[in-house]
Image 1 (cartoon, protein in one colour):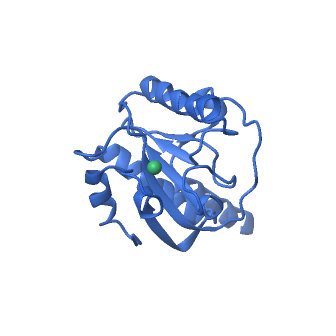
Image 2 (tube, helix red, strand yellow):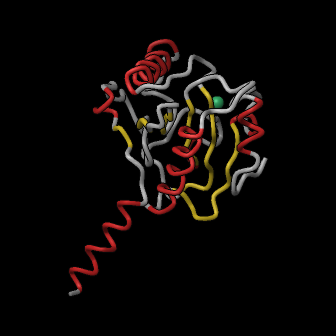
Length: 181
Ligand SMILES: [Zn+2]
């Protein structure tokens, strides 16, 4: 009986998280170096790529690979800088993941999850599928103990002089729970 109860609890936990395509599933390259991050983290930082948008899985994977190539080949980083990327196909793509220090927001990298929405959101919002994927990913991180329950949500521009995550999307995340400039 106890085992049955435990099984139900496990199932409920698993169901609270959306599907995340792992780096091997999207064909990403292995990191050349990495540092583990102490979790749960206090901050969630939202970005956009400021590049092309994508609305199919194959198009989004192309964009994620482009970002990884840019970060590794041009910037010389160990890996793609973000913890996760989200497309307007509604899918979530693993970057450095939950427990590895990122390269997306100086001074916040070792205490944050960086979520990038693929596209340019200066004059329009990401579609509902992408916005819901970001919200579900944050909830998942809290439920799995990677993000503090009392986390603080910020846009990249709140921690670095940048236009990221775009004016329109920034005005939207300002209305999301736990946002603090
Ligand atoms: Zn950014």
